[in-house]
Length: 212
Image 1 (cartoon, one colour):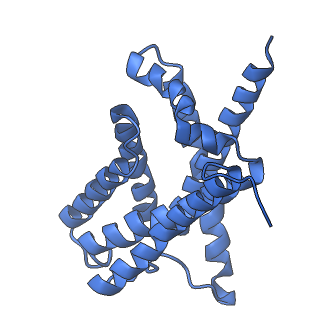
Image 2 (cartoon, one colour; image 1 turned 45 degrees about the horizontal axis):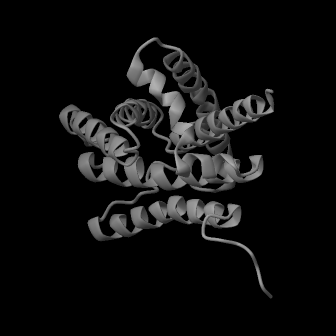
C-alpha cells in the first residue's frame, strides 16, 4: 500500500533512534564476549530472591536523576555564552526531529539510551579497564572511571561544551556504579534524566510556539 512517509518521518526518526541506542547494547555484549568481560556483571540476576536489589537499584537511579536535572537547569541559566548556547541545541535538525515525537516515544528512546549506552560505557568499558571491583586497584578504578567518562562525552559531540558536560555526567554515572555495584542505578538515572529533560524542552517549545 502506498505511503507518504519519508526518511525523516516521525516513525523513521523513532525507530532509527531506538535501533541505534539498543544497538550500542548489542555492541557491548559482543565486545564483552570478545574481551571476556561480562557486561551484566553489575546487574542483579532476575531471580525472585534478587527482586529487592532490582527495585532498589531502579529507585535509587530515579532519585539520582534529580541532581542532574537541577544542575542542568542551573547551568542553562548561567550568564556564560558557551552555556547559554546549550539552549540553542534544540534548533539542530536531529534534536528538532526528536522533539517532534510524542511523549511515549521520547520515554521509549530514553530507556533505550539508558540501557544501550550504560551497557557499553559502564558495563563493558569500565569493566574491561578495571576488571572485577573486588580485585581492582584504586588506580585501575580511577582510570576506568575517567576513561569511560571521556568516552561517554565523545559519544555526544554536538558541541565542545556539550561533550565536556556529558563527560562530567559520565563521571557521576560511573560513580554511581562504583558506589552501588549495581548497573541498574545509572541505567535508571540516565533514562529518567533523558526523558524528563526532553519532555520539559518539548513542553517549553510548545509554549513558545503558541505565543502570538
